[in-house]
Length: 65
Image (cartoon, rainbow, N blue to C red; front, side):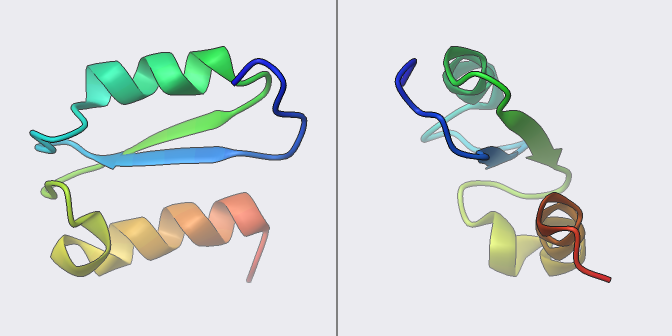
């Protein structure tokens, strides 16, 4: 992951039991400049579980709107 040189967003649901936030925080830390976002009230399927928070994080990362 240290070879990644592209803008990267690592996003995880706060209740994700498959890829827990602590593990994903480590993934983000391994990618230079990566942004890390925890989606509240969401598990592994963050986009449909909390679409407003997921979309807001994605829009901010992509600088939309």
